[in-house]
Length: 394
Image (cartoon, rainbow, N blue to C red; front, side, top):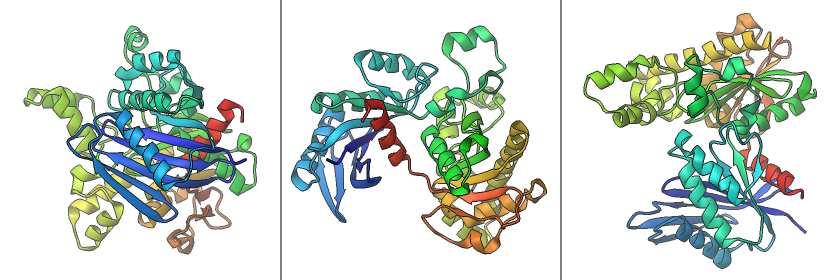
């Protein structure tokens, strides 16, 4: 009998879901509920190439999940083969170092950790409670974005602030996108035909949110995101690394803490630099002669190159640099400048291979390149489904 996993990813006003055949490694259905808690909500359910839409109020996550179950009942596929529900959980703090079977005690601990991820953990907990109430006869598993980075050494995760504060409030680097970084690291090893235990990899997860990791022998030793997903690379709307003194300066100009937080998380990055977050739009603007777009791309590439160079130093060398996620997999005009400017470190770009668009793993470095450059499509849903099966022992 097929083992199906229902995957949930809940935001404050949204619930994304996917039904996955974990053994076949294929999605069977997907959908999203939007505008939860607002006057009129919207649910889109996709199955067998068809799309079904329902517009009605969804006052909370329980109502939203009830709507999801109704869609499966009406349009399929059946939920009879679901053996577990996997919940994407953003922040596990230093408590949860791997995916975990959800119990009342786990929910209580996640609630305690909500201060570390106030935008992500509370809606995630709401989704967990809703799903456990409506699907009480199957196990539920929390899959943490931070888990892959629980192996970071102290010199990597420690901030240079008074240790009493760090210990009291859990202030340290946690890292995010861990499910993707872990999956892509393993797939890179498969593609290269070498054990992941003997590889030094730098994984660039480049999407609207972007992060980079140094992976030594399959173990994460450094990553760009920190206490929150704001730190690190330039992103679609996030600034990434910035002088912390900016907070005091802008506060002195009359901005509140919440306004500054919104500025750096939702109005900065590529959006703040040039008004565009989609790299296809940025490239089109560059071709039109838009100098703001050109500068934005230069800043993006400069930050990425700086991190790669730093991680080569951390690893003591590198066997492969890997690009993944929406930008990493599709934007040749981003990969190209990065690899060309790292030629002195042994990365040699195959210009024609870089232009190929494919959903398959591939090398974009020349055969004689000392450091391999790979494009490995991420599949966080498959990784989550497989991890859920592992946790329940199926």
